[in-house]
Image 1 (cartoon, rainbow over the protein chains, first blue to last red):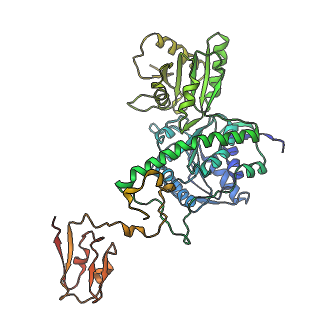
Image 2 (cartoon, rainbow over the protein chains, first blue to last red; image 1 turned 120 degrees about the vertical axis):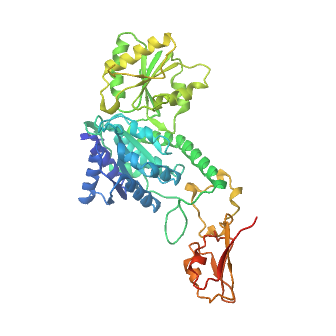
Length: 392
Length: 97
């Protein structure tokens, strides 16, 4: 089938991908800016367009608990949340990943309270960074649609069995109407076979999930979980390649933009990559040898690809959308620095925090980050990180 | 369990740490941190079984003579049996080293 190009709100496109994945169960609690996804899915179920159980619950803690149950009986399960909702799910996030239940969740990134903010940054997902889920960031509507379908395939692969989070920026991505190519149902059916769980809760074959782990076994269980998450990496590469062959849309853990001959690079995650591309174009026109790296795969972290991507760079400017309070500042930059520390040759890495709580980051601010980094490179930076666009 | 827990390597852990064998908690002796144990004075016991009913750990069994006794592999020494016993035939005594 020839791909059809449509204009669609990104939240609706995500819901359509969930429908095409033919999920069995959705349990979710509405929270801004995730609401349109759940609303649309409940309509699809109510209208008989999607044969699934839609389970309304009284909180996000219950939403993910219900999802754990339905996934444990072998149902393909989806949920979505934002901000405080993700925070309320926190304890269940770790249970789901340790139990290896391949739930797919859309996190429509929104700032954490207080002060109360409904707008976008990455503080919600960064607070749950170590929850053991596969975590993917998206830049535009097409990526959201594609990655949602890929997420089910990755999560349920017999070499993976890991829950997967698709991150999309609240409002700046979730609520905009974007042009995108949908795919035919026959392509999805071919790409995404029915879920075959390794174990299911069933009275015919009793077993225990989520059992007690005494000190004699807990560390072994955690090592097995960590190795499994790292081992998902080559499978994710393989499945993105397969999706690329089917659709012509190729995905990599880090996307490089105009990096040929670059001495400086910006690194972003999420929808601000598109604005950064414009800023890079402008700076290149002015003769500044700057390129852009866009980090897509956040967990498992692409250590080797980061090391390869920065080869030949003198300066790396990392933009974070969250603060690790009292620590190094930006969680992404912290990771990048760790990945490069043991390298004999590495660029100077500068941490910038921008775009908190829905604050816009115009192209000029990306240029300012590059200029400040070039200045700081000449002298030893005093601060661990710089907050940009903050009134002094 | 196919083998004792301390012999499992991380590679042996089933996906999601699932316990595939039903009822294998029996192999794990949970009574080893008890500080008191129930002692039954069978002469006073009327074999009513109220201790068996109330034991939260199902650690009480009935012997061939019909008396109810605690399986000390699993009894945690909570003393509920002694508290509930109508005739007062169960006494909690300190575990000695």
